[in-house]
Length: 233
Image (cartoon, rainbow, N blue to C red; front, side):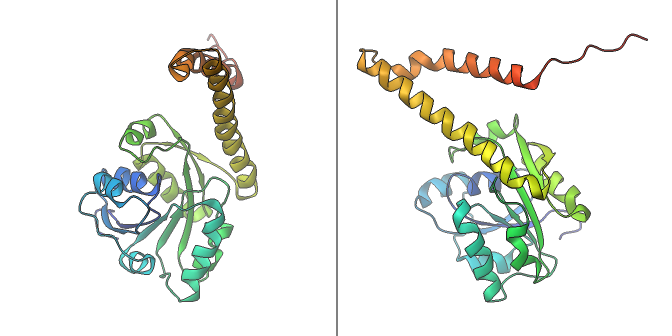
């Protein structure tokens, strides 16, 4: 780590999440060492201009913090695969962004001296710079060993999020909640727009926009519960 606390950060995962997390952290002064190749390198280059595209092991070799943003089912194999070739480094921070995994999935990296962190920014990523604005109003589910929890929280804050600590044993339930909110919302909106299209509404998404937004906002307020009034002195 540099004296000013800035890190050399490498990104494994060039989908919608990894480049945006990298851009958010780079915006606070961290240096990006590289990112792995993905299905749309042009989009990644637009978000992270000048950042070299590297193989995963080279990203790990060059980085003080490795951000892993890959699909849920790929994460265990990726972490153990790098461990199999002794790729992780002592004292290296390794942070994944998956909601359903905590730090247990990082055990092979931790066994080689790496420091595991799980930080999930709770937004629906588009993979574009629009996400950077969304992060400023978002929360992040944070799981880490107690000794390094402040580091995970600080990284969440640097991304623009408000960190919320999720216990390791609660991480699966947290992931289920995130999946339920995301997938159910998409499914219901898909059904509703399909029905409107069938009855001749030309722009069903636009037609439902205000209704869905206001309904969701009201439901979220109700779920949050009433705010207790201040106690008079």
